[in-house]
Image 1 (cartoon, rainbow, N blue to C red):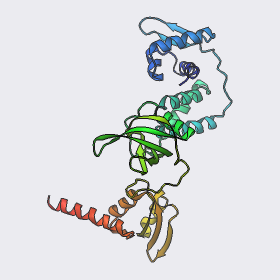
Image 2: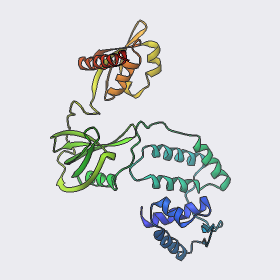
Image 3: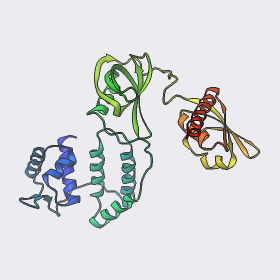
Image 4: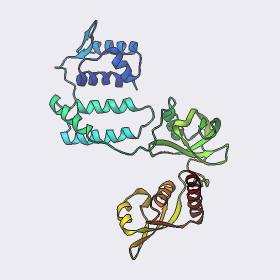
Length: 314
């Protein structure tokens, strides 16, 4: 975050939260207390009326009469933007949590005190359930470096941790697409080590640098390997009509071709959501029957056989 953005953020925070200590401000912006002291001094020189309190219970606050000009937004517009920001937080863009919080504070500061509290209360009752995994964290500048590589059409040199093998490998990678799914961020592109398309989770990247070598694959159509998470396949299913009415809006059934057969529906759907199709078949054995592809049916047989063999022994 740039210095001017952080200093503006301090003004917004002090207006919204009243008194805050240097330590609290430093934690919020992920900087040192010394940096906060310099920011406070710079704001004071710009005649921003920040009041300093020393000793126990001390801290900083801003004169309540201080006017901070802003664009004119209606209450409804502010609520809409706050909802968008709250949804955006769920995407957990690497190393940008502070930016989301600061922007929310700026929007709330547009409102008078009473309305600000009402808006905050309304937003607290709105939640988004889009997470299936919650990455523990990202290496510094991972997103910045990837965006730089995409912007300049350059390759990446990265070290990647494989949890299944518990090993870390270094490789040259030509990024093609940045994607969010199930709560995690993925980078898709050409792996020069494996000489084929690969998908890597950003939170498993240990380190990366933007190289000088040109990315020759950024505008190419890359074929997916058989094991790729985002590989598209076509499935044929027989689903009871009652169940279909419940699940027909699920993302993995979008654009499905549907034929009605008595009290059942014959679905043909092309989707990358293999895991969801698998869960549907396994969780509703009496209402769902998989017809194609053959390799998917063999996989279902193997899973069910292993489950039976395991639990029949108990």
